[in-house]
Amino acid sequence: MPETPPKNTSQADRPREEPEVARFAVVGRVNKGKSSILATLVEDADNAKIRISNTPGETTRVYSIPLVLQGQTLLEFLDTPGFNRARKALDWLQKRHRKSPNEPKIEAVRAFVEAHRNKNAFQDEVLLLEPVLEGAGILYVVDASKPFRPDFTAEMEILRWTGRPRMAVINQITEESDFSDEWRQHLGEYFNLTREFNAHHARFQERIRLLKSLLEIDETARKRIEKTVQMLEREWTQRRGRCSDVIMDMIEACISHRASKTLSQEDSTRDYRKEEIAEELKVDYLKAIQDMEAAYHKQMVSLYRHNDYEVTSDDSFSRAAGDLDSEETWEVFGLNKWQLGIAGTLAGAASGGAVDVASGGSTGGIAAILGGIAGLGASMLKG
Image (cartoon, rainbow, N blue to C red; front, top):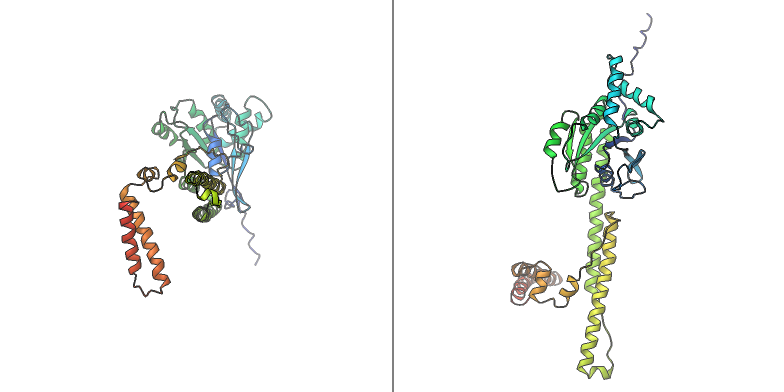
């Protein structure tokens, strides 16, 4: 009996293979915060890679912004030029589609890109549509501090014609006004999902939430996105641990630091000289503490990749450190009397606990109790 020939499987019937790198094109009108959102998502504010500028139309070509973790790239974002002539581009697409109404609308988009490639008329639209036609998902960014206008529908309609997975991201560039609700009503007609994301205030969890939202619009990239989120969460936990080590090292260095000077026999007999030297030591001590704090602060800044931070000078610590047992000092450090009492109780109990441990437990914990009582009393009476 002859063998049955294998059944031919069309391209459309074959399951889509997951790409090695999940790609998403970030599109929208100029100066709506696309580049700032990218810098936050990939945690990189290097202007050589991500074009962040107040100049309209700064992004003049497609920039690849990979999210690299442990030397591995699982996600790639594409910073695209903003729409420039969306209304006229949509008119071209609609005329093309009327000639072949039975064709999928994406074919009109392909024809548009081919017809205007290497031409000036629709240069920005061609640049942003090319990666979408090659399979990239879409993140469409709008500015909720500006009201919705009907001409935005042309951009959204063009993106819908591509048929690609797409998510709208509502950005808030300024706090002066908020049109988020108005935007959300219109975006729901054109996009699979809408999320709010303030690039300038987003914390780690908001960043993770936006990345997880990509799972809801593009199932083909599920493994890549899930692995990226897992690696980011693990890296963030490790980073917090390293930062804790830096803080503990700083506390240990500051607590153990001493400023000293040997007095001559002549100076030791003159009270005014002892006061002058004590004042000099105080200045040296505070300067050393500030230098150590700055060095450790730099390490923490590096851990969290805030490379463009600005340091604001604040001498409240120096003023407070001059009189550590005064009520004014407590206020500088944000402590009221009861809060200081609690801190004193804990510190006293810890000191007493050390005695209990050193005695092998023979004190029955009484040292910790007495230490706590002493710490509370000292704090409430004097500090």
